[in-house]
Image (cartoon, rainbow, N blue to C red; front, side, top):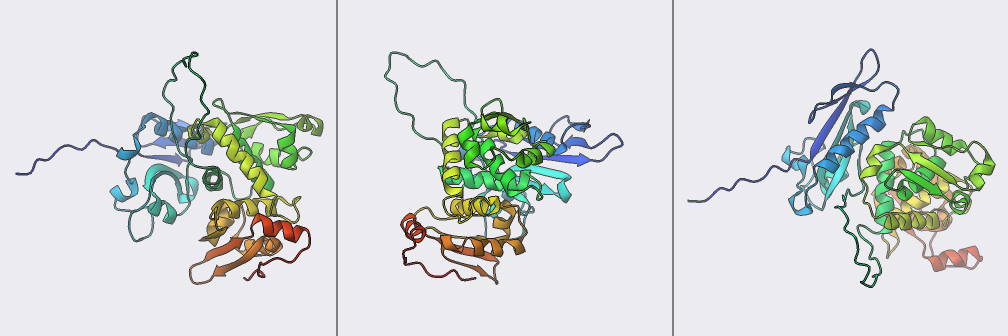
Length: 357
């Protein structure tokens, strides 16, 4: 006779619906008492993301107990694929044109084929910190969580779902820096050097775009104030569920600053810098090669798929090769090494081949 032990319920899937009403949209949550909360005067998307983030913070599970909730429901959230595989990630999905939002644990395979979805940066909630023993010698802090490249890649994927498609490239680069540099209160202090690196010390348009979408508050009123640095407030509640290791996130933000302009001929064009950053974040760190769906790269850069190849042509000086596979719709590329880039900048012949498309 075989014993049957009860398995604890580990359902980490939360669904929120926005229903239209006479006074504005109403938030309806299937897991709690939010059944028809009026959202007049606030951003409905921010309220939904903040509500889902609250569920994720309240239902924390150890990694070994988390399961693919998509698989538990028969994989009804995406087209058929070869099966579940890979680490469990927190996936944010949007359905019915933004009227239904779902946050759930999903394996990497299911997450990669789910439409209108993005992987949320890891939600590691820190336990109550104990006072350190001042008599012990302070040790050098070891980085925690994913590396810089993975953090930037996950943030690009999240911002593609959190920001509307019409938000420009400069605003997306600004949102990337703010999201990675925010503190536990949602405040971001951007120094004058960071703003100059983003080419935003005298351009209020990206701030205006993010403030109109109610993603942040604190747009500079004069170019002189931006030149001295900025303090802004993040309004996107889902970002409060990020890993609390702020030094690691700031290091990833610095990696993004060094990467987005290092491979562009015209660094004043934010579209070129955003595409260069996206390709570097998705490429293999050792070989410089990458192969991702063309639609995904275009969505993370705020472009339509047809507009991406002309941008790649303008970035051809940074590539050893790139091509689009018509059968699968994948974009495959190989970035030049730093040495080859330096040779091209000096006008010396290198070993790279011409870009193909």
